[in-house]
Image 1 (spheres, rainbow, N blue to C red):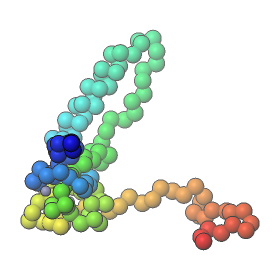
Image 2 (tube, helix red, strand yellow):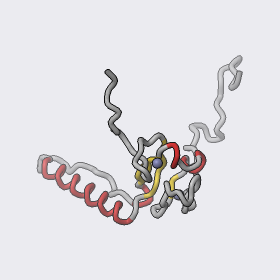
Image 3 (cartoon, rainbow, N blue to C red):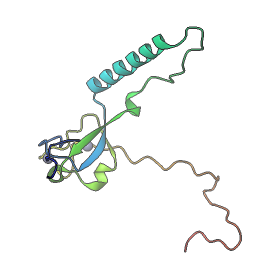
Image 4 (cartoon, rainbow, N blue to C red):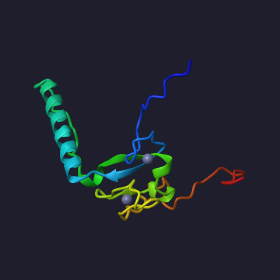
Length: 134
Ligand SMILES: [Zn+2]
Ligand SMILES: [Zn+2]
């Protein structure tokens, strides 16, 4: 007997169907405030559990709005374009929204540059006889 087709997992932000695609969006002010409150509470709870004799745990800086994203889910019918889904959307992006599909109402952030390569000029020194491509 097949398992019931219960909607487990993420669902489309527009129609509620099972999501098959997702992308990132910056947190709204309210979402970020909630996130910050949660993170602050988490640190306070962790601090309360630490040994007062021990050095305080280093939590690092508190999260910043530009460092936080939330995941937006959509079904096949309400997915934005693949290129747009690869980018991080503004906090006020309303996608998935039928009036804007397959786009959205914001200007997504440009993709992040690739991390710096290990070697200064990006080239890799290979042993003699090895080539970088086929
Ligand atoms: Zn949908
Ligand atoms: Zn957008």
